[in-house]
Amino acid sequence: MRFLDDGLALTGDWVSYDDAARRLLDQHQGAGPLPPGYGHRLHKRDPRAARLVQIAFELELEGGHTQFARAVEQELDVRQTALGHHRASLNSDGAIAAVAGDLGLDAETATLLFTISRVPGLVAHALKKQRRHPAMRQIDPSKHYYDGPSERRLPQSTL
Image (cartoon, rainbow, N blue to C red; front, side):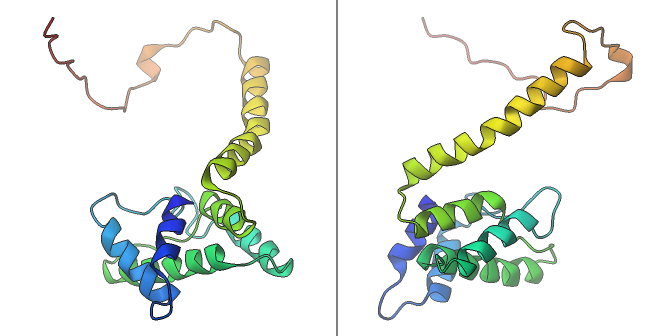
């Protein structure tokens, strides 16, 4: 939501959503591959985001945040296509931020509501794990491998 707020702050009499999206993405370059709220590990187009934006439109709640989020999505599409990458569309987190902003919520309140909305899924996941697996199960290390970051060394203390 802060990303969208930063972009909306760039708009004005002579700066459209599209121009502000280009400027904000230029500023974001180097901060990471994609801005927050865009892209998904599995979906080229997150169906949850599309539905949230559609509902906002149907309820006449679509405002500046949602419109700016779409402008960023279109500019990202142009940039990603030019680089030969797949499309980076708005994801559900970005859609929630946009709709929450259009509802007049501040970023902190929207973050808390977003977190609360994730709790049922976390509870269901934890219950599933508890019911399907014994508390202390044997894991055969020869059947698994670690693919995380390599070992790191902590800096020496100057005490």
